[in-house]
Length: 366
Figure 1 (cartoon, rainbow, N blue to C red):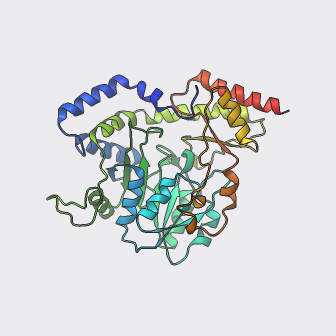
Figure 2 (tube, helix red, strand yellow):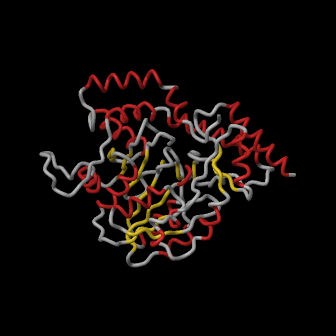
Figure 3 (cartoon, rainbow, N blue to C red):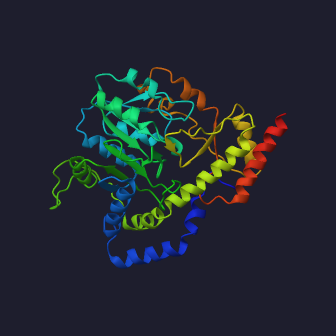
């Protein structure tokens, strides 16, 4: 089987290293928020060229913690997209805030910046930008709009580890950057883990407390926090995987380039590369009319694809009440998009098979 994502194949390449890490952590006697976590916080902050990194349990917690650190009022609105992982929206609601949805661009799947200013009202306090599928949003324009309207800016970089906007890695453009290290991510561990980046010292100190009960150095809760801690094993794995991130992203780009070259004459829209962005292809997402037919055809030939995302957030039962208007591009895309296999563990012969059977599908349609 060829999978849209295959973390097992990637982790097995580091099997001996990971086994050794388990032994080292076991022998250390320190299992949560220890030296490996501190090392990873520093390493990843340096990689992103930001001043501070705070490791947490997962990226959903990371967004909630950041929003809570901003001292907003209950019901204040957060502008973001519906075409994203539900975690983005779940965290907003968990922080006691209200999501306000914007449509996305059909070109790159990111927030439609042309609509951004039109949606800003007095009760909007935050913009959460999602760098979806591994391609950055136009951060210069977004920062300018956020600054002009005195809005906080959060980057959800959960699918964009190592992605660049104008030669600068994401995670340092806003007040906060958010990263997930779920097993299928470009930078991943064997479970849930997340991290917050920031250049603001005061905000760093606030989220540092919020992740662990609001404790000070004497373990006295000075503010109401939560329990969202990274453990030593995840941090140790991430420290070694971080060294391979750029190499692995290059492998994803090569697969994407191979697909682009072979799919250019097919009746299918392949991902656009923004001139300002260095894409890291967390997903390789195509658009076509007969999406489900292609998906089923590939499955019959042992190629497993994905749909990211089949149902947008604003159409889900839990979040319908926050959106009484249409998001035409988002609603259009849900029936057209398909994620093809792209990951650093994908072998050349497997990518060739994907191309072979995609082409065969379109030949059969003639």
